[in-house]
Amino acid sequence: MANARDVKRRIKSVDNTRQITRTMELVATSKLKRATDRVGAASPYAQALREIVESLYAPAFAERFPLLRRPEREERVAVLLMTANRGLAGAFNANLIKEARGVLDSFEAKGVRPELHIAGKKGIAYFRFRGQAISSEDISIGDAPTIDDAERLVAPLRQRFVEGDLDAVYLIASDYRSALSTPPSTKKLLPIEPDQDGPSENRQAADTFILSPSAGLILDRLLPTYVRNAVFTALIENAAAEQAQRRTAMKNATDNAGDVLEHLTRTYNRARQAQITQEIAEIVGGAAGLE
Image 1 (cartoon, helix red, strand yellow):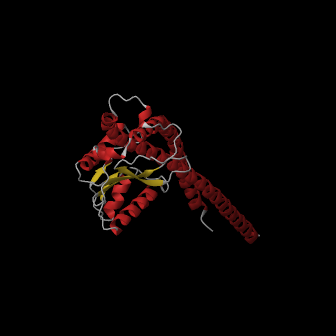
Image 2 (tube, rainbow, N blue to C red):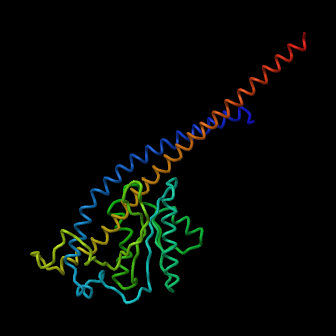
Image 3 (cartoon, helix red, strand yellow):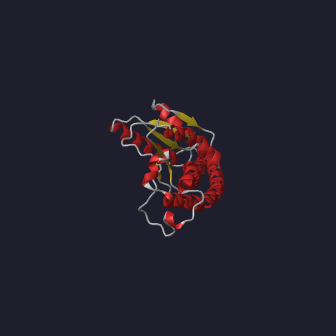
């Protein structure tokens, strides 16, 4: 049986760890509330922007606007991966990295060698360890991403697409559906492909609007904003998903520490009881030997 002093030392160590994980759970809960508020505040604008682009879009515009250009074959592709800068968030980073590996492998199977652009220390560290070439890195995005962060990430890729240096840009991030559902997803960022067939109760055809200036001039200003906002939405959803998974992971760690403490406490009580019994037996034996 384990020594009572050693067990007591382990109990103190596990209790200290439980206090840390409990604190981290509370911090993640607070950050998750603010992150979900940002997601909720940004969603109406993103939805309205998407509906406007879908309403104004026409196939003929693909020849006039570079961001709508659809190459016949994707030979030069960029993949933008978003991960966290910190760990202790369950499988959050691992799921995103797994999604990115699947996308990269699928392109390489087609004979296409994509460029990899990463935002987040965890993704950078993983692909560096694998020896994967990384075209650009960004570790400056915090828990509250801004529109400037989105513009910094997408502006070079958007410009290269306009110039014809890239045929497509894909974005890998977590979709925030709820605190318990944050699956990784891959979306085509460029070229812009409005959903013309999907259902929308509020969608209206372009000829039902009075447009000033013309639809073409509006799209000229709107399309770069649409791309930037798509990246911004992905950033804030990714941040919310990170905090959701960190809260869950820390709660599980706190609960597990409680179970370990309960087991160690029973072990300590048994060890202490055995020690006391042995001491009593030694006293009784010594007293009997003196008689």
